[in-house]
Image (cartoon, rainbow, N blue to C red; front, side):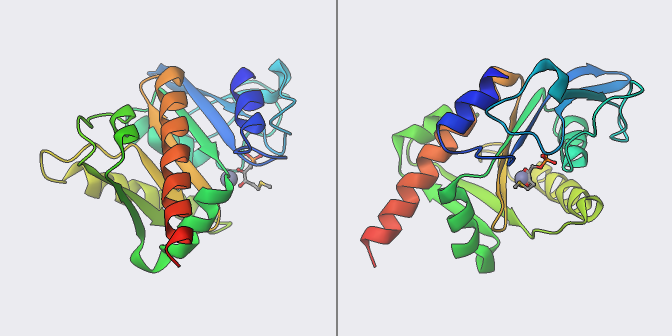
Length: 203
Ligand SMILES: CSCCC(=O)C(=O)COP(=O)(O)O
Ligand SMILES: [Zn+2]
């Protein structure tokens, strides 16, 4: 609840945008996911749903979980996520469109990069893949599974994939726990704003 209020206050989870999850159990898989369509500034305990590995609510009478629930399931299953945060910031949305033809946004040179897992120097280049947006979340979940499988084969020395963008939609990041995901979302939103402002200043 506190994360929703905070990300809303930062302008990254306005209105009903965004969704969040925490992995409760791995065997069987159980995630606590935000309910769908909730104003993220006003989440209450009733606005969280425990779901299984198929994205189904475990308890009868639970509210409908996020429309993007299956992305959280894929991240918990295939990327070992302990927590996932998804935001809809202005900079993430604009940059996902500006770099859509390249299907990725690369950011390098900023000291803030060191807030991300596996990054020890500002000289590191991180790449945020950009997935196509679609209302078919099953198709998007398959795209994400492919992306994670490919990222797993990347060469040693590059930081692990810990975030991606969806075209004209927003940012996903995940970590071992909510603190890690919270730290990453703040660093990534900062980095995207730097990159967006830098590009604007150079036109
Ligand atoms: C106006 S937000 C549109 C849906 C979306 O992208 C989102 O992040 C929130 O969807 P949910 O079903 O999790 O409320
Ligand atoms: Zn979204």
